[in-house]
Length: 388
Image (cartoon, rainbow, N blue to C red; front, top):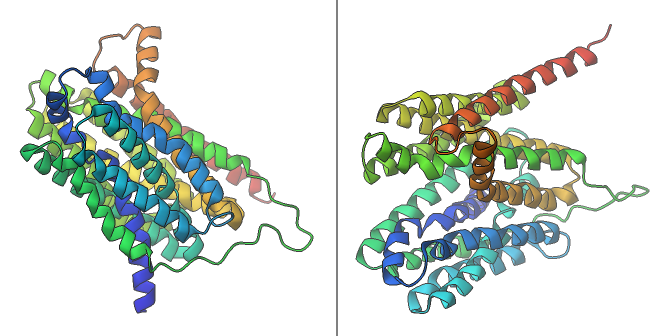
């Protein structure tokens, strides 16, 4: 029992560091003040550059894990890069040197990111797997809150201190040193042809890519919405966004029970909650509606992600799990990065340029159509399978 409990804690610690990318977000203004000659667009590369670098690292890590390199070895390499690349800027005064080590941090983060879900699928089955997927979201959200909160507190004293917060990754590093290696999944059985990656994996990847595009305006535009609508200031925006995380944490705790009831329709439930979130923010004009929208979005997103990984575990050969996880998670990061460009294009095409709430109206329509279409397709498939 003790070994099983430690295994769960060690695996969940991998999720804990996945939100470490947000550590320095509260410090960006302080970093900008420290480097006044650097344009703000270039300055943002301290955060966005690491995200971009993490994408190919995630894909490569997923392909190597468990097949070419052991999970544990990859985790150790990834966490060493995460810790070194995260902390090193504290000791630097040259902005471009900071960018270079942030790239190292991004590689480390990218290596680690697909391994949490892959380890859950490798170590656990059935309802325990569903519980761990939910708890993984909880651990990621707790990590996100802690990294960002401590990063903000540290930056209030000195911008460089925010980078030291990445040292929390040492806890994960110590835990994974004692993590057992999952049994290597055979690529083929006797007489079995080497499996190809199922097309459904790319369907899951596209789904999370599209969802991130549609969801991201909530995460990046909230402070502007609140300020323009005279609903509050930066502190209010921070509290609203915290409710996204809180909603995600609660959803993580109850995911296994919800999934037991709704099964794959949990995906449609998540889309429905995201539609409610966009309606609340799009049509609401008080801070209360912003809180409702952010909380509903946290629930919806944290129902969707583990559902995708549950389906992923059932769809692919065990030897393909790390690669499939890497493809899906890389698509999620690309979706977040692409969101602003997508909505700028849509606003131009639809004549909505300058309409601050346009992304929320668009996302409301897309999530509503997606939820209804998913349910109708499932019902149609069920009718086809019924015997005459």
